[in-house]
Image (cartoon, rainbow, N blue to C red; front, top):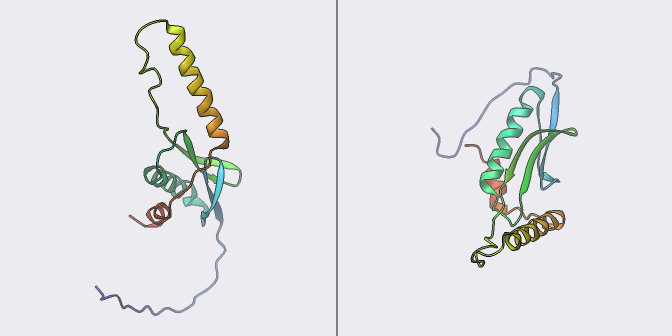
Length: 135
């Protein structure tokens, strides 16, 4: 164990050719450049899935469902969804006609779809640190 001071002696041996992949992280279908990384091709899928799972734990929920994806090239290799908050819009209705409830639920559904199209997800600074920190 050290007190924060350590040294490492090494000697260069040779260069080696390695197959690497660039893994992009997408939050709400938008690429987050700060979370993109290069990794050995064999480990890319596994590491992408780990990052996506950590992001889902760390990011706050929104009014709409947020897809979090890891992509290699154009291919999505891991995906998780952050579930949306759900407001109980039929709470104020007492009995009555079922069509009124259906109308309110349909109106809520359309609003969520519209919000998903124009909604932007802000990623807090602490989320970056939590995701990149090794467990």
